[in-house]
Length: 297
Image (cartoon, rainbow, N blue to C red; front, side, top):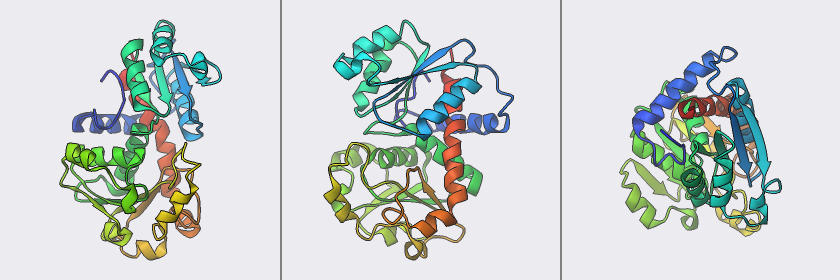
């Protein structure tokens, strides 16, 4: 593996290998191999972040490296420099890059023109680091995803759901996505996905029925704040106690945070499942360290 650009580009063995490494690194925390000793990694963020920035900065330091945070206002990208020019400069100075931005193509172009390991820390198309952390949490809480049903309730064509659908395709677990009709995956995407184990519905109760994992996310992704009317389409899509009555016994609830209580998730459900949700947040650190180790040169 030379880069982590998407879940789509990973094979099942690569996903499970990263999770095995993450489990090991979590157990070994404080006794880390210094895989990034003497290496500087650039964190290029045009989207704001709490968990992504902190987990990558801590992870790079724990592996012996030096994180360099660069917002769009710190570099010439903010003034219109082409991503390929920024990539060709940084590729001669730093040893790897973590990019959190809007366009998936920008991350792909950076990887191509920089010649250094590149990690997608979120784009509008995919959020691979979050999915790896989620899968790690499912392993820890339920022993794995084999013979398990995962439900996602919310925007059916967000970066999170795209990544979840590719994870289901690669790993073979059942995934049911509940989303308003206007927010469901495009037909051409579903054709390219070609995953009979992935179902789409406009009925949250149908998706959650007998599910072992119930996942949700904000209704408006970063950059969609001017689309407040879109929230009206999600009436009835809150993950609450009534909806969870349809789930399998012993189910877990995941939320990649930040959470808006009273919208995509009720306050009581979030607090009831807070231990799992914040374990999920912590696992960003361990999953991302596994990616960094895999890409270390």
